[in-house]
Amino acid sequence: MAQKDYSQLAKAIVAGVGGKENIDSLIHCITRLRFYLKDESKAQTETIKALDGVINVQKASGQYQVVIGNQVTAVYDAVIAEIGADFADEDETAQVVAKTKRKQNLTPWGHVKEAFSQLIGVITGAMSPIVGILAAGGILKGVLAMLTMPQLGALVSQKSEFYIILSAMGDAVFYFLPMLVGFTAAKN
Image (cartoon, rainbow, N blue to C red):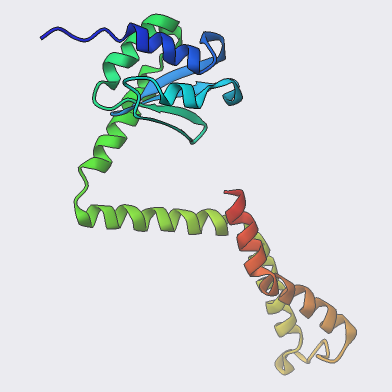
């Protein structure tokens, strides 16, 4: 069976993303062309969506993704023939294809484990930047507790201004913890 010629579609896609000069690199996965563009505002999303052979266009992870479907490899080859092999990143393409296949082959339990792993990743990413602040607040509260122990001679009174100020500093971390976590989660 003869392979369909995708050169016209490739030319239209390249023109739609702003031309060869707007492309940094191109990879593909199982169903999508993934462009890394210099300026996404030059891309004509509606024009590309209207092309025969294009299912959809999405922007994600710094990529301008043109959803092609099962014929993505043939369209990718036609686009690379149009813009030149310098724009191809075969290593990253192989990694993305392998990752996509791995996700497709997951069992229902595998999807739960994958989702749980992503949840742990989000929590870790949100908490990691503030671990030092939490440790400092905890250490400050521990030192104050030791300074007020009767066994050590109660070096500092719990009624003194020194104690009240340092205690407030130690407590501030925990009072503002929801805002700190929210801020770091939003940055990630």
